[in-house]
Image: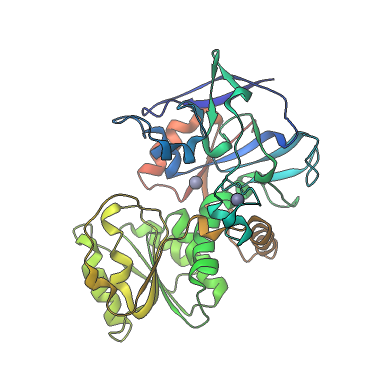
Length: 375
Ligand SMILES: [Zn+2]
Ligand SMILES: [Zn+2]
């Protein structure tokens, strides 16, 4: 079938164009897409090969082979057609997509670490044809399109009351932030939690800390508007950081004095600013836990003294998501009005509004932007 999709070659630009999809094979699902979240990762992947050639590890993100691919990895929609081995969803079901698509059989999956599956599912590029070329899909999903063809393990059924725009952000920002608190750090009731950066992921960390019963949730950001939002999501105190405060050292000293000189029990880094990779350690007490949530990968100098004493630095991928455990919990919390999602989707855009969505996101004007198809 012919669909409309946003395609990039990873050199800093994209086009909205027609792609031909093959029908779903045995383990595949065809969806009509209704919403796709817009994520910093989408922007980074779009620029990945601007200044360098593709490397093998890049294809973990964008798919198995081709360096041209359909963008987007945060999706929700309606099942149109399923292959013969698919029995957990049927045509007409409302679903969200999960980008860490577990095989269910490898070493990591068998120890329940499905987020770091060693044999992540993806589809062969023969399924997607763009101007006579075989192409990939971002994270084996390709949600920025009118339709998507995905592995069955990526598809999670959702209830009727949640909107597609709310559901799609569960499958990345919300899962990453919430899961880093609940699954990875396992924040205990009564704790003091510091959150560095209050975008979509940071706000999800705050919601996770509220869920865990943290009593002090201290939000740090350089934008006053984001701190206002943090308070609405459950932060108890805010600290406006100075852009000149390198490594957030001054902010860390302030937090230390606010916590009786000891430091916080937990600190979560959600800024995606490479220089702030070590920062959460500076806010954390001896024996406490620092968590890198934003997935910084750059090479940066690291003062080992920051680990003193007995501190732990966790670097969870995707909030250690186990899809069958975590999405039912998040959907339940949403249905009980204990998870703010609508409030997180600051703005929606049509499929041809991605440029505007990227510029709003990069200017920090929105917590989360979502493309809404056929609205
Ligand atoms: Zn994302
Ligand atoms: Zn696996």
